[in-house]
Length: 232
Image (tube, rainbow, N blue to C red):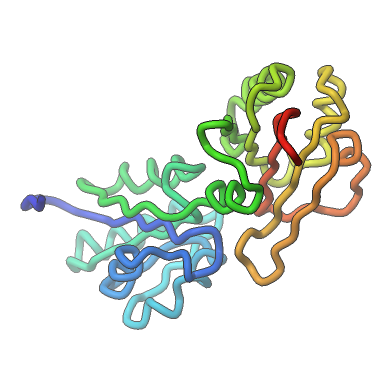
């Protein structure tokens, strides 16, 4: 169903986990038709092949407000069409970006995508109905999220899927905090890095073994704590 909307509009497209083969057809069409496409540089690198006519508006954490102001200004003053791109799926750790766009325009169209969470579950052979998802990406409230993580790990009934927070709450330090909180060091776990990228990596072991890892993890990391009764 379509409606005639008055006022300014922006479309937010989730581009998937990294391989642009996971960009949806609807998302690709929106990017191909846009006058401006805004997003973080790493995200824009994914969709560049499809943004032939668009002005690319690259942003970083330090200037994202100014870049969005510029792009939305083009919408208001020149009637340009704007697509803002986000990693993965819009319902996984994209809330802050969505809020920034919504504050600036009258209408927002959302085009969901494929999340790294979905890819990780496929790689690990686990199912959403047997799992709990927790994210540490929000800058506020990480303490309560970590408490929730400890709760579900001690409960031991389901797999726990965790998005670490770059760069201060990452796998090795999280594993150490879990052991201090009384979580069994024998709990099996997997860390996926840069899912669907050419340099994708995975590591499997126990919580105790994870604490000993000294190598740096990618900011595109995802952790799965397998339920004890699983075959992992």
